[in-house]
Amino acid sequence: MRLDWGGCPNSRDVGGLPTSAGGRIRSGALLRSDSHSQLTADGIAAVRALGISRILDLRWARETAQAPSPFADDPAYRNEPLIAELAEQGTTMPDAYRTMSDDNQRRITAVFALLADAPPGPLAVHCSAGRDRTGVLVALALSVAGVPPASIAADYALTAGCDGDTILRTLAHLDDRHGGVRAYLLKGGATPAQLTRVRDRLLEGQRVVSGDSGY
Picture 1 (tube, rainbow, N blue to C red):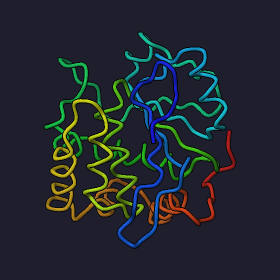
Picture 2: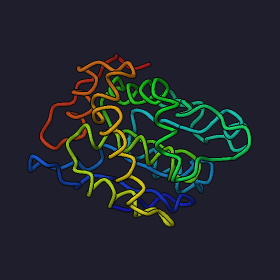
Picture 3: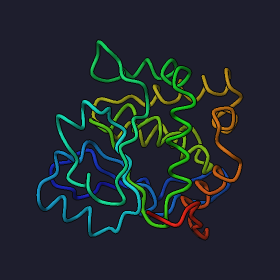
Picture 4: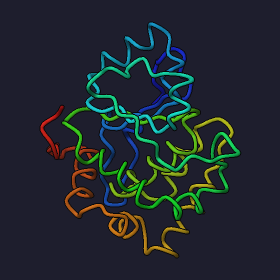
């Protein structure tokens, strides 16, 4: 579902996506977007009205310095780069997701764990365009929650210029090289309890339990 966040055209709620077990992702549980630095005053108000418990800004430090988040001083905000900075290109390219995942396994897993350990409430993740880094993290979270690859790819493809095959190839790579998303995250340092918490906070009808007491 598209979100009316003025200035962030690539904003949506992944709620409603089906799981392989017959469940659904809960509306308002996980929100994804492009950079919040683009938000208008009305857009900022719309984000605040949702009572988001954790905002994960996946951009690099140099990106946040150039275009700061309007929520940088909020207790819910965390700037947690998903991948190591690339010296010669400003963002990752879609066909590089497999290499990106392999080279940044522990870093990606550490950011994923912040979803598990956030206080109860909506989660919001974004990078610059809301495509590459956001796309990979959201794909991992949805996979852990039981959403099949085809539905994950369909959500990814809602971003302008994105091809769902990119995510399908990425998930297939994680299966072939790492034994699947769960095994990839566990090898990267996540605990089984953290995977369960992410699954439960995303699924309809589950009780949300945070891994910490807030800030």
